[in-house]
Amino acid sequence: MLPKIKLTVFLFFLSSSFVFSQNNKLDSLFYTLDKSSDNTSEIEILKQIATEISSSAIDSIELIAGNIFKFSEKDNDNLLLSKLHFTIAYTYFLKKDWVMAIKKFLSAQSYIKKNENLELESELLEYMGYAYSKIGLRNKAIFFYESSIEIEKDSLKMGLRYQKLGFFIAMDLLEKLKVREVLDTDLSIINNSQEIKNTLNFLKTALAIGINNKNQQLIKSSYNTIAIIHLLTGNNDKAWDYFQQSLQLNIKRKDTRDIANSYGNLAETAFRMGKHDKSIALWQKSFDYLKNIDDPFMKADHYKGLARVYYAKKDFTKTLFYIEKSIEIEQNYSLDEPLAK
Image (spheres, rainbow, N blue to C red):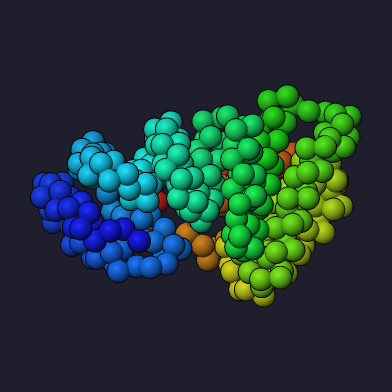
């Protein structure tokens, strides 16, 4: 737990700053942090503090925290230093300044290791993995995700990280396939690679943990990502089975958006299997749910899916019709602005 006298000093510097002087929520968070005796709740409070300050100038919090670093370093208080460094690093993380976030997380890690705070270190390693993935350093991202899993004691958190690792590798594979324009003959080579086998093992482990913990979100995400891997590697029948499992779970949860997405995934799979009429029926089924959802870009993507099927059937009139509907949506909305209500 953060020493009360130093917390008071930190709060004094923070509250005296013009940037944070009107932030009553920060006062409340620091008070809660001061009273906390549980590592897990402290981590969440630190992240909430970072969220509050992330909308302000980062230089201000670094300047203020620098005063506390001086107090802490004199007393060799690694516990306080580790949490301050973590808070600053997570602030950069929220601002999507990935390079600075990594730099600050590395600084925090050196102090966290001295305190043997595995919970905080596990969180830190996960965020570093994500940050490395965002700047394209794939191997480092995988390394830090795996390192996070190795020291995590909470089985559900472990499962979530296995799923995130599997999803990251799946999306990386998708980008590679787009760049290389991989032919069907290449898919068997990719499918039999050790990396794909390892990724599927990660995801199946996540699925087992999700089932054991009755965590529907983890189960659903694992089903979907396993299906995506199979779809990308040409195992359409297996992809179909996993997408079906995800659909049944979404129907049970009555999640309209996810049901629409599941039907879209099945429609794409049917298309890749050469079952064009079935694909059209599934795309249309997805629109039964999409009409109740305010997500124009999802609708645009589904129109494109329908257009691809009709193009394969050489029905160019309907191909053009659905392409135009997709373009109309994309012209009416900007990805950089909030969706119109």
